Length: 169
Ligand code: FEO
Image (cartoon, rainbow, N blue to C red; front, side, top):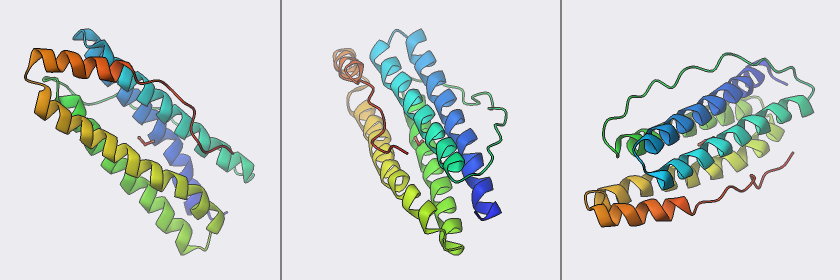
């Protein structure tokens, strides 16, 4: 495989584990505020990010490429209001989309169609993740200032359950 594409894919493993750590920190924030539904949502989001990291890991090994695991940075966001993590999550997903797009472009540049096809799932997934994150921001804007509505929103988010990614390698 092209060395630049491999390096970007390898780096994405770290980026996805960092995303998991960031979302786990958001779960941690909401748990400390007594919002167990919001905490549940982000705990599950963290598990999905770990799944993403492992997909990149397996993809590289399946192509006989070595993987290097680097240190995962400390989550660097500070949250004050209940909506801060939601906005940060939305912006983070936009950033992750830009990373996926950059790998996609690099793979296309060298006619690495296998990687392009692998990344198609992530392109679609990023569309869903940005939509979900944006919806969370909107719901909080609409309902977050009313305690009863916040309670119901928390209950809705408590119902989220984990399911493994639809992409398998
Ligand atoms: Fe792995 Fe939320 O993107």
